[in-house]
Every structure is written in structure tokens, then in C-alpha cells.
Length: 361
Image (cartoon, rainbow, N blue to C red; front, side):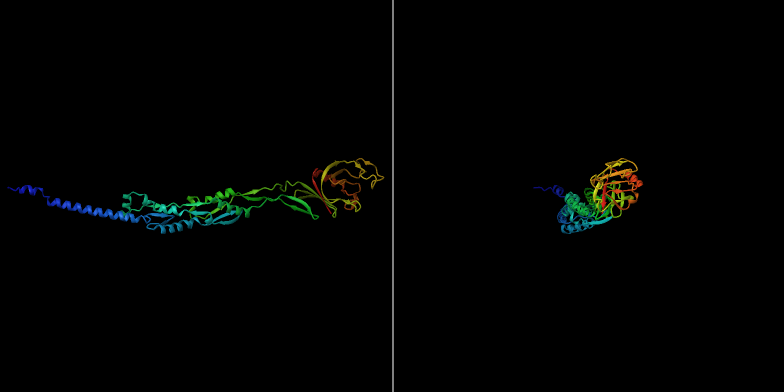
């Protein structure tokens, strides 16, 4: 049987082919081993924060979950929990965020690991083999309890709010007591709570700038101001004087005669009920001290009331003129306040019906 050596030699790979096959096989083994290593390394790297991840300027690269949690708490708490100065009516109070602001550390930790966990395998391979960082910043996450903020603002308001004061003038213990009106103040709780919450807006909460909130404080006007108080008359029996106040301001002082011990001027709080121009005198006690006197005396020089009379709510008591000028400044009347003509006419023009009159001992 004949053998064909030519055919046998033709079926063998050449030296070049064998070398190429060897190189390819080696490369395949190396590549497979590399990919296997990368896969193992990629799996192991998942328990570490990838390179290039930071929060609030703190690099978290390579940290474990526990390390990242601690670092995040420190990095975010430091700027976030700084006290806030709240100014109200010139006074500054410090608000401590600790009881009202809560960090969401769990979410921030998840975000720190997210760049690797959400990246494709090839992107992770490029990161591990090529050293390409992910360059991601974790967003600070926290919650603000506005109910707690409002409670703090309520406490601030309790220290800041002051009621308005109405103007008053009165007789207390025989003394004229004048109280001027004053504007109060009240914290606008809703507006101040909103302004305080705005400090913790995401875009400003982590800034290192000083924290100052101006509380919204509104004026509370008095119901009765000094100008709105109106006029008041005080009669001081012991001094034989009439004082006319316009609001809280003393407008005029007059001398007068007051009642005798037998017919004393009554003390207490009264008001003007009638103004009489050129009054007619009507005998008030025809069977008493007026016995023997006319039933009435028309206006004129002989009229005991003079040219003007101002009746009070106290029965039979009035301010009036007199034709007995010498009696002014003494206890000489039957209870009324006698005044010289110029004074009663001046007082008559300044007063009105309904004006309060206080008669002091």
C-alpha cells in the first residue's frame, strides 16, 4: 500500500499557526482570570463607598457603611445644628435646632453607595480597573418639625408680647392719677415660624454664614390714646380749685367756692348733664334755707347763678357764677362750685355735656 506523505504534512498546522493559537489561548485564560478577579473585586467593593463620593465637603471614599454613617452624621450635623439667633424687639434669643431638626442618615448612606450600585458592570469595571472616580455628592437629608418650631416661637412670644395701655385719668384715694397710653407689641407667630423654617431650606441650611432671623413683631395700638381720652374735670374741695384736663394734659386751673359744713359739696364721680346760658335761678329750698327768697330770679345782676351755669348729675349741684365774688376760695355755698364771672364763662366754652367730673375731698 502506498503512503502519501504530502497529504499528511499538509494537514498539520504551521509553526506560525500554532504560535497564534497558543497566544490566543493564553490571552483568553488571562482575560477570563482578569474578569473573574474583577468580578470578585467588584463584589467586595460593594461594601465600601466608591471613590469620589462626598457629603458636605467630607470625602466618604472607601468607607464601610458604619464608617460612612458616622462621617455623615458629623459632616451634616455640624453646620445644620448650629444655633439660630432670633431677634425680637431688640432682644436676641437662641434657637437650638436639636429638638426640631432630624437627620435622615439612612437615606444619605444609601445615596453614598448608590453610584456603584446603580452603575453598569462596565462602568464599575472602568472604575475599579481604570481608577475613574464616580464624583458624586450626597444631598444632605433632614426633616424639620414645624410643630416644634411653632412651640418655640410661642415661648418667644410669651416673653416678647406686651399689651397696649389705654390712656386713663381717675381719682384714686383723693389723688388724680394719670396714665398715658402706650403701644403694645405682638409676635406674628405664623410669619416668624415660617422665617425660622426657611433657615433650614436645603440651599441655605448647610451654609457657614451667621444665622439671624428677625421675628415679625407687630404694634398693638391702644383702644384709647392720649388724644382720644377726652376732657375731665377734677374738683379739689380742700384746695377750693377746679382742674380741667384735656386728655392727660392739664388745660386750666380755676379757683372756686365750695359748700359749707352744713351744706357740703358732695364727693364722687359725676358728669355734666346741662349747660345753661344766662340761667334763671329757681329757689331750690323755699321751705329751707331759701325761705323768704323769691321763687325765681331772672338773668341779671341780682341772679345768684351769674351769667353761666353748668349742671352736674349730682342733684342740685352745679358750677356757676356769683355776685358774691368775695366768697370764691372759701366754703360758702350750699354745695355748688361758685366761680368769678370770667372763669365760669371761660369754663363754659371748654366743656360739653357728658364730660366726667370727679369731686375729691
